Figure (cartoon, helix red, strand yellow):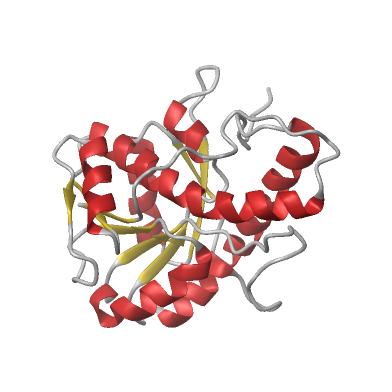
Amino acid sequence: MIQIYGSVVHKCIWSRRRFPATRKAKSWEHEHEHYQHHRLRRYAAAIGDLAAKAGHTVEVMSRDATKSRALAEQVGAGATTGTFGAAPVGDIVILAVPYSAVLDVVKQYGEKLAGKLIVDITNPIKSDFTGFLTPEDSFGAQEIAKVAPANATIVKAFNTQNAQVLAAGPIGGHPLDVFIAGDDSQAKARVSAFIDSLGLRPMDTGRLIMARTLEHACMLWLGLMTRSIKHTNFSIRVSLLG
């Protein structure tokens, strides 16, 4: 079973919008705050939909039971809802909540996450894009690992993809790349198999410390989006030459 912590999908305010190069920084801060919340909601829907279509059993959990039911109905294929705070029964637990809330969520669940494979898709980026919300000597996935039970396994994945693009599927016949990082090779193999089952290409980047680089890669994505590409309909991927 795939357990997804998130909430009902909302239309992303950046979806297919183009922005003038003269947009004020304050406006970008406002857009980014919305982006962080809506991105994860859309991710819960996108991953849940792909997982259900691939034959996985999906359970959605949210603080708002009405929203979780709505998302489960949207995902369809027998997707169910769980009670927020109850011990997850899923084999893979996906944290589709903003980084600003994820540490509190993990702390609240505490030992109920013991032994679980937790997939971190968050990006701890400041709203003005000047840096990260984590301590200078740390990164998001590591901060989650600090508050999770000692025997829970953390794998970073999905954080460099846009939910809209993820839901749309392959680009030019090529599967989207999902970069992953983690210290447990068996856990990464399980996450890679899950990603592959969704029609995506898993790309192992190394140990969990590489999650810092993946979080910086999201900053790169945001920089490209705001400065050069001016819309969200693109993906960072690896192209093999020759």
